[in-house]
Image (cartoon, rainbow, N blue to C red; front, side):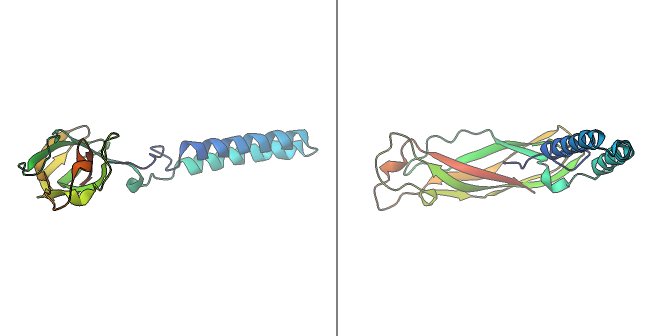
Length: 178
């Protein structure tokens, strides 16, 4: 699972933005002190600091934080024509500071990475099949708690064309929690 940039917990702003605002406030203060209006600078400096504190109290955006970490625990490396579908298993972990209800984990094929020494030819997501892609979890996970999931299966699709280009390749799976 990929996560977006995690904002600071109590600001809702990325660290770089807050550092830039702070640097601008310091530069403005130094320039005002050196100017002929130095007294005005001392009056404005507390206002700038107060503005920074007000900005720091904005609530964080909940959708910008990755709260579930989903990891595959099965190794599905013997996918071949005529081979039996292989079970997909994994673990979902709540990385949020509060409890999170996890209804299910779904899986989809995001792509295929061909082996560096693969023969020329086609190998893509259509060469593989996923079944039972929605795997129930039905748990309320406290902070740091994990739950196992399983049920989806992956298999190799036997096509009428040569599929040697898929040998040694890696099927890239994308997981989503709900």
